[in-house]
Image (cartoon, rainbow, N blue to C red; front, top):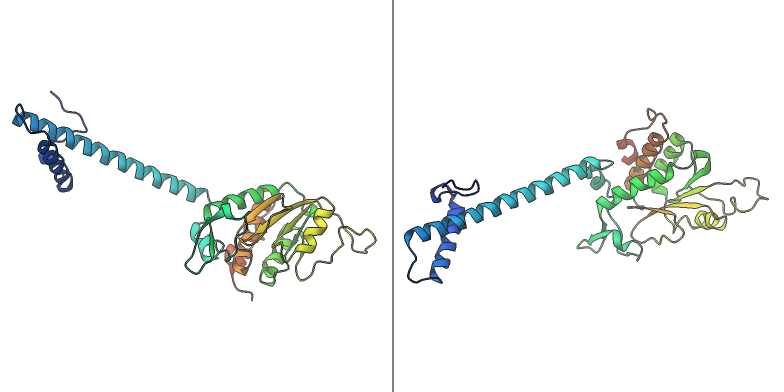
Length: 270
């Protein structure tokens, strides 16, 4: 009788497989002693056990291969390499985690800092690019009062044509029509709701849209879309602004040749 493809003769098994099969047989025969157990029966039982072990091994290999395939595909689909996310510290949070940010936290480090899930960071950035791209540049403002983000924020405005406020946002310029510099907008990008609270308040008062960058200690009330990530570090903010700028230009069919490469955005200020 022809044997199944998954079956192996005892001498064909590797050392570890044979050891497991032998142990299984020993335990099986120990608890099933009695008449009628011929050498042929024992050999058949050994073959069946060995075949089962081989099938389990193949199944395990297939599962591991599938996991690696999924991992590779996920990496290929990311906006940038995982290593680039890591080196900018975009995944780093603070010791405080708000209820809104808790679903995005992967774990805590030994020093108590919360860690964002990098897969979710990438997904939220993709969604942020898609959301931002629905608006014309003249209908968007970006506000970044945090000094470490000024350099990248200004470059973001330069390459996209989006109006940027860094050092100071004059409260009321979206709500008070009597002000000389009054203007209207459709979307406000908030870098940190704690520092950019005046711009957030104005935007909500005039019932316009908000795209908010949130660290683990941010509340996201009022946001129409949230990007998660470290919004305290210049390197991390630089990376976020770079990806948003690159994605925005591509989505709207604009020239990206004037866009500095990523290293400029995450480098130290000259």
